[in-house]
Length: 257
Length: 258
Image (spheres, each protein chain N blue to C red):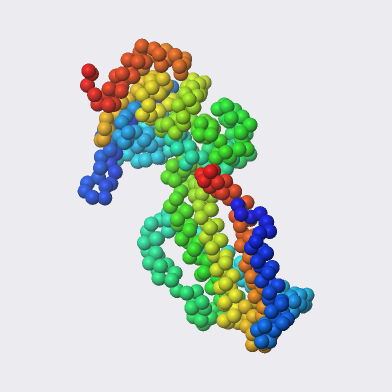
């Protein structure tokens, strides 16, 4: 069953001079329930725009977005957006516990939100860090806080916008393993936007490749690598290398030599 | 944080100048009865303090100043939030605000007297007008600086607009608002005293003018001393409060610097 459906989604942004600029042209994409899908595209192609429309954070100009069969026009309770810049999405005046609790305290009240936060912090390996402030933690730990906060809302789906691009390479592998672990345990549906080809192959079931602006889906690939995947050995498999070769060539707009 | 009190060469200079004051007055270097020794000033200060006259006057001035600060500050925050979130309101009222802002505040006292009389209402209003503009400007800057991602974060968790405004925008803008208040605080004291000097029979400003007419130099200097200490104390107290309230802001600033 398709959990998220984008049907002929088009997006125009008003421009100061002349007609509105079309950044997305008739994108159709369906993410199955429980699937991990990655969206790859050249930078500036509108990947984030696509994800924001899928999250109900940005209106579509034409077409429709459906989550769990319902057409959405505002952020749905089933899906949570995880931002690229944790420094902007975490609230510096709240400690880590209350940042995580922020996801649910408008529904549960502050006391129960704190209990939820403690549990979720344990899930991302940050037990005992509740009293710290975000700016006292490393980048990787801050993104873990943001992930814990997303999980606190108990979403069925995570929409992740290059969530590991602002951390160093080793921390990135760590966070990738964490997100795979969470995805498996919670049977989540994930749509991940990235410009990192290896990240997409390591994590995803399928990879959608977008074209330059105005973006449309150029390719939809089945990764077909068995799970569980190891962040190190997966990268040495022939299938991994073959996909990497193919995807990089596509993204760099090169023809097979 | 430059809040720690350490005796520096600056403090020594102040002490030397106070000593010079005492000596110059005792030896009558100035050849005038209007240059009383510091000790005479302190005696006058102690006398007026013990009779309760000075504390009462200072209390009245502070009360009016605080009321004006609260009213003008609250208005500045609300209007600033409104201007920044609804561009329509800024386009409509912005030009009016820009026309009123450059008027020197003491100049609005005479017309205000016509409408509001000589007493509390007029003085509180004058202070409120003084405070309104810096707080308004800072609030608008603060709202503009709130990251779009931060607000979108609230939306993705299904948090409504009012709660987003109170739990995301307001705390994020608080450092800007407090900076506006810090600037306004010094102005508010100045304007409260000036208003008292110009009109009515209230507060430390009026007392100062009365003492001038009576030619009582020690009382005049005592009053000026009180105002100096008051201004210094208010600023210090505000800085302490500010650092406690938005410790995260200063902590992040330090981190960015280091």
